[in-house]
Amino acid sequence: MSAPLLAVIVGIPLAWHLGLTAVTYWDAGRVGLEPPKKWAAITFCIPLFGFFIYLFERSELSYEPDDDPYKGNNFNIHPSRADDAPLPSRGDDRLSVDEDSWDETDATDESRDRVERRDGDDGRDAR
Image (cartoon, rainbow, N blue to C red; front, side, top):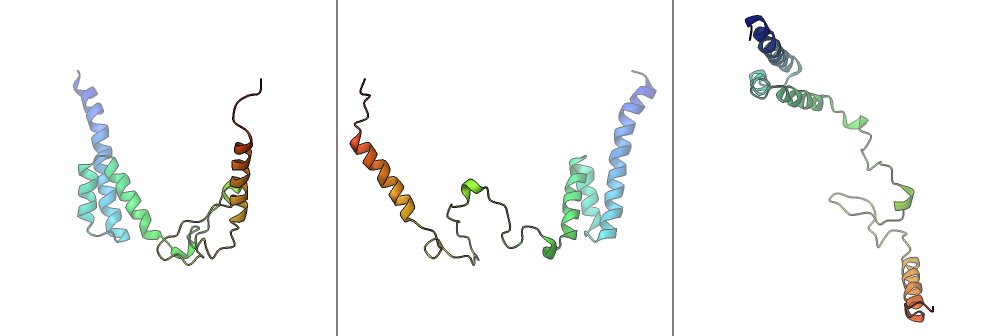
């Protein structure tokens, strides 16, 4: 293999790798991710993925809880699942299933109707 081709094959990725490490070191000191040497070492030791780790960690610095669209349990529920009982969690201030206005008589009537239909039909075809 020729020396210029080898220099291109090895040199370009190595230049990118060292460039990403340098940008990480410079930016970590600028945005306040301390110590910047740690982030440069992570980027250097884990090629390419280390830089993405740094970017994901950096994005957490700009988190504003007031602008969070999921704050206060605001999420969409598919209409077919709208009558499901919510699962309780720690610090949940919503009403429990017993206190909620969930009507359990509909569910028991449907299951009773199914049982009555099964009792009247022995399950065999009348052919």
